[in-house]
Each structure stands twice: as structure tokens, then as C-alpha cells.
Image (cartoon, rainbow, N blue to C red; front, side, top):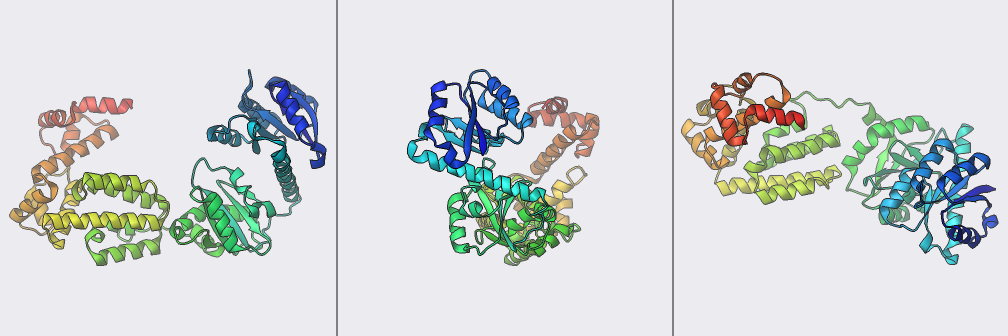
Length: 467
């Protein structure tokens, strides 16, 4: 029998809840009740208990605090929340603290009470049997060839959602670090399963059908999936749901040290932006990403760096804002590829509006990159024009059209940005910062910095160190 205790500060609510259900028919016996958290803890010290029904809003010790105390002192006891609040924040906080389920008191009626308790008891029995088999050594080796993998996309996603799936009601749910799997021991109707996953988890969870798991140890599977699953899903996402992953391929991905020298790194090479205005460059870039599969974080960083470094030169303000907002919703390579294509389209339109050829556009992009990397050196317009193989006069004319300001103005702005970084990243004297930022006269540097930034370099540094 499952021994249960009910905790609620309203006596009539406790009695009503207890009398509403035929507990013995579910193998449950109510062994006690309490009106507040302290009384409940005292009762639990004296009475063996398996299940605790907890009201959230009680005077003194709240239901949240009681759940925390129970999890610390009596970790074997499961807690179920009794609440009048069915707002998501209340429920999510309770589940985060370890509650296994929640019951909204105002929605509990004779018609649905039995089904609610039946679902709860079935889950508890399933968890107990799974835990018992694992303690005997069973289940440490996966007997199934395939398993469903669940990875939350929404930080508010809860394990409780997985327990509503029919597949989880029939097969065990195994918890890993930040992900869950369900080994499929019998024939799995993939079409029906896919429909249910999309309907119940779509947008909040990423799912995959992993094959090749038979006779693999749970410990190794957890390690391999932790190292490679999200990376693999990033590149398979968008094609189908759930995605199809092969365990042998995941093992290879987990063991590979995908470190490339700068000249071989596809994202490093793409900084030249040739892919934005040249079809061949685009195809080479896309093929390189598929081969090298840089990490999702590096792809994301690359995208945001494009906006930061080139938004003002290649995009209109509204285009930058649109891409900035869209970037936050990119969850896989398919979505990032579409995003990069949009960036490329904007860059090509900009080239056409400026009346520049592809070759000149690429030269101007190279010029800006050269200026940024040599901003602290003693360079001038002739140096940069020579570096990109353009005549000084033609370069000056094209650059002003491209940047919307003169070469000298652009270079000063780059040097000021370099000075800002150096001021915050080092403790060197202001005169040294001025020299390293390409300014020969530190007094001129300080005046210019104050005029453009609104404060002296020393004030900028002091304010930055306080934040």
C-alpha cells in the first residue's frame, strides 16, 4: 500500500479531498493529515510515508518551503501539489522543486478525481519498479535498438509533459543530464508517435529517434549523447520530427576533436564575406559548414558578429533589427542557413544601390577588415588602397560612397573603438592607450575621445570598472 499524508491549512478542504476518493481501490491509504508545514514535518518523523499532498499557500511555512524541507529530510517521499493556482509560474516552481504532479483543487470533481489519482499511482509504481530494476543491475544495459530522445528547448519545459506521452506510459523514461530517453522495447508506430510528439511537445522540446543502442551501457550512452546529441540535432533539425540519429555516428562525433587551423576553418574563412555577393562563394561556404559542422554556439556567434561588424555598412536599420530579432529564434542549421541567405540578399541589394561591381565591393570589404586589424598602426589611405589593389583616388571615391563618410572619419572611429576596448581591458596609462590606438598626440586623443564619447578616457575607464 502507498501511505499518504494530506497537508492543507483548511480543515474542510482536507476532509473533502480525503472523502472524495476511494483510496483503497488504488492501493493508497491516508495515514495522516496536517494543517501546516511544521505539523507535517513532525508527523513525517513519526509516520512512515510514501506520498505527500501539499497545499501551496499556507500561513507560516509555505508549500514551497515544505517541499524543500521534505526533499532534504525525507528524499524518498514524493510530493504532489494541491493548489488553487493553476498559473504556470506556480506549477513550474513546484515541479522544479521536485513535486511529481499537481492537482488544481478548484478543478477536482467526482468525475475526474479517480482518473487523476490513477495516473499518479501508475507513475509512482512505474518509478518504483524502474528504480528497483536498476538497483539490481537490470536496465544498465539497453536491450532495445532504438530510443526516443527528448531535449528541452524552452527553459520552462518540464519532465511532467513527457509523462503525458503514450509512449512514456508504456516504456520507461530514463533521466540523463538535461535530457531524457525512452528505450523502445517493442514495435513503435513511428507515424503515430511523430504526430503525438509534434502535437504535445512541438516548439518546447527537440526530439530524436536514436538507433543502434542495443547492448550499450546506460553510462556510456549518457556520456555520448551529452557530448554529441545537441550538435547532431543542430545539423539534422528542420528536416523531420523526430530527427533520426545513429548511435555509431554520434560516438564518432563525440570522439572527434573538430579543431581546424585558421586557414581551414570554414567560419574563419567566411569572414571575407565573399559568400554574400558571389554564388560560388556561397556554395563553398555552405558545403564547408556541412563538412566541418562547427558547434551551434560558434555558428550563433558568427551570425551575431556579422550584425555587429557589418550591419551599419551593408544593411538598412530596419533590416538589421529584423535579423537581430530573427537570430534569437534560430535553433538549427537549417534556420541559420535561411538567416544567412537573408543577410546575403541585403548585401547584394546594397551593392546594387551603390552602383558598385562585385570586384569593387569585395575590395571595399577587404579594406574595412584591413583598417580594423591595423587601426593601431600608422596607416593612411594610400596604404589601405595599395593593400586592396586600388588606386588612391578611385578608392577614396568608392570608400566614401560605401561607408557614407570619408576614409579619415572611418579610421578615427575604428581607432576610438580600439581605445575603448584597451581602456577596459588593461591598466596601461592613457598615453600608452593613445599610442596603441594609432594616435600620436595623447592630448588630441583625450579631446577627441571626450567630444565623441562624452567623457574623458579616464572617466570612461572608471565607469566601465564599476559596472
